[in-house]
Each structure stands twice: as C-alpha cells, then as structure tokens.
Length: 267
Image 1 (cartoon, rainbow, N blue to C red):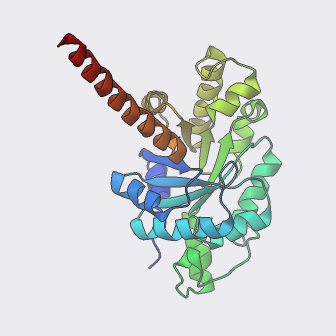
Image 2 (spheres, one colour):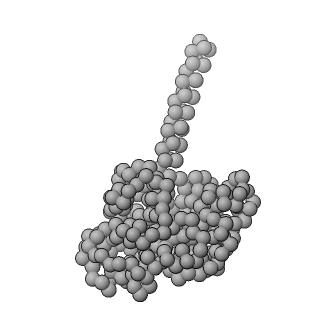
Image 3 (cartoon, helix red, strand yellow):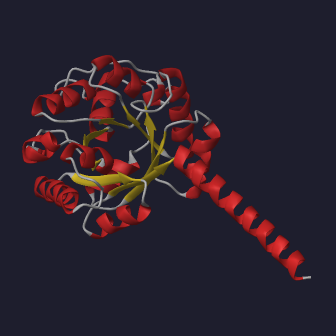
C-alpha cells in the first residue's frame, strides 16, 4: 500500500496544512526535526537552494519515512527535472515564476501519466518506496496523489490568474509575496497594492476550487491570510530558523553579561 498524500487530501477538504522550506542544509536530521515539530510538509528548494538531485532524493526518502510530505520547488520548467524529482519520491512539484497558461499546461503534462499527461513510467523507485507496482495502480495512484503547485509571484500571473487556475490538474496556487512585491515595483510586502494582488489571487482560487497558500518569512502575515481563507501555509526556512535562533541566544547571553557588569558596578 502506497502512502496517501495527506497534504493533498487535507487541501481538497479545505483543511489548513503547515510547512516550511529547506534551502541550505541537506541533513536528514533537519527533516526529522520538522516532522517531530509537527509540520505537515516541507519544500526542498532547487531554485535558490544548494541541492543536487542526489541530496534531494535522500531528503525525500527520510521525509516519506517520517510521514512528512516532501514537496520540491524545481528551478525551471523542464521534463527531466519534473520526472526525475517525482521518480525520487516527491509528492508534489512547485513551478516558480509562472506567467502563462502554456507553462501550466506543460507542467501538468510532465507530472501526469497518460492519458492525462506524458510522464514516462518507472516502478520500484523512490515514488513507490521501492515496491513493485503494476502499471494500472501506478498511473491511478500517482495521478491522484501528486500535487501540482503554481507559484504566483509575477504581475503577469495575477493578470491572467483565472485562466491559470482553470487548467485541469492544478491543485494549489502558492503566493511568493517578496517576488510579487518586486514585480509590482512596490516598496514593501505590506503595501496596499501587494495586499490587493494577493487578495485577487485568493479570490480566483476560491472561484476555481483551487487551494491557495502563501510563503512568508513573517508567520504573522501567514496567519492573517489563513484567517481570510488560505490553507497552504508556509513560513521561514532552515537558514532563517538557524539565524533567528543564533541571534536570540546571543542576545540573551549578552543581556546576562550586561546585567552582571551592572551588578558589579552597583557593589
């Protein structure tokens, strides 16, 4: 029995799911820590991250074993990137910099087995947990349980968002507010025009029956959009968590040092 994609199942029923992104560390320990912390999914970043496919495959295997849903942001739209990542066991693919219907149609074709797409079949690999699976079961399972995720981070995407979400097979529109802010020429992710663009994407997703989400370094921003109906909720990265934790620990230690000096002066 192959594992159910619990994240896709939850999103289809309108339930929120929580995740983060890995961009620096290939350590399987980080995957296990996220699973034990209670995260639902993790994105392994091949666009801005430092990983090669072998490292990604190893991280995916650990995620699947811990029950953490492994998703991958590929760097570009190319069949070999999509197919090899899925064969390694990724349970969803996110395409960055989406702008056109043609890109979305190609992504769906690459991710789905015939008759819905053109993905070539291989069994007994990471995506089947190295089990032997017959062709009928392979096609049915993978086409049903693999998440197709569009990253919405360009003005061009917002302008044709209804058409993008109307492509059959799309499961999620996930907003990248930082890139969207740059694309809009705005000064801050909290500018009204950025908020309006995000709201436009969310409304389009709700009309189309597509899940909508956001990835922000600010968990409060993510929480605010959850209240407005977003369900794929992401904050931070391994790099951000390490930096924030390191700064906080150093701040506490320095405060203690200052207090000790002040006490000594008082005596």
